[in-house]
Length: 222
Image (cartoon, rainbow, N blue to C red; front, side, top):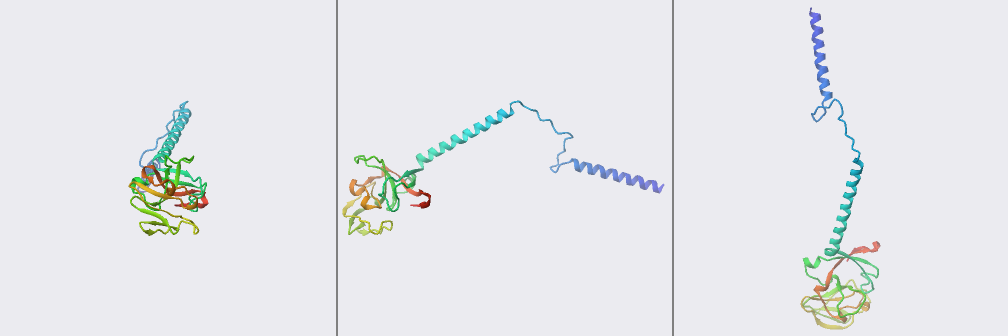
């Protein structure tokens, strides 16, 4: 009898262990019960067609959105400009491309030394509508050229961006009117600028040149 009792007790423990093991194997790690059989997936004859249609629609929205964003950026924020002449050498050369920030002067005023793009004065004939020059003086300044040097408010201006042999010429003195700027090209001998057509009203300024991006070998902040 003791032997029989021992066998029964062992079998009972083994059966309990097998049940526990079966329960553990059948239960996934997240605590949910596994289905005895995988659920059948209902086949739909138009699944591929619907999937392709949604994919095309999604890409269409992406492309349209990208175009809209690009247009908004071009109109209100940044615009690329091509340099048509040698008037800004050696800072910018003919055929260079620059990126112009059109929001700059909504955030702060024009500063001396800024390189700006502006609309050509209406009374000045020419095929090129937009010009690019450097601001030499701002409203209220008295500007002149003497002794081959730019002088603003009686003080000579050091212009590190000019070629050593650059000829500034004699002009002025000119007092810059309110809301206007006096501009000149860095290549003073080859620049058509405020020395000839006068000061430029701020309303004509398109923006400030910030980056020379082409050619890539000369890419730089301007």
